[in-house]
Length: 96
Image: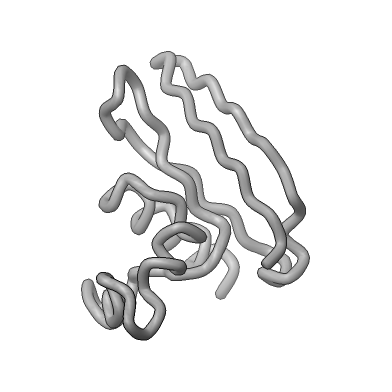
């Protein structure tokens, strides 16, 4: 059950911020401008890899959240997604 909740929260985070959760995580480290953001929204903000926003014409129209493995196992990848609405997302992540 935890993986389902984490995936939904990753999508929630990316949709609401327009950033990948990995990028948000970088910005949420001590001394960075979004430090502490993960304590907002009832704890739903995720600051580790697995969420990406879907955009269309520069506007966020949704997000994808994935879960089921460890963050360390998140592979280096490029992901392009087309939905029936024509939304596109591009995620480039690398192991830290």
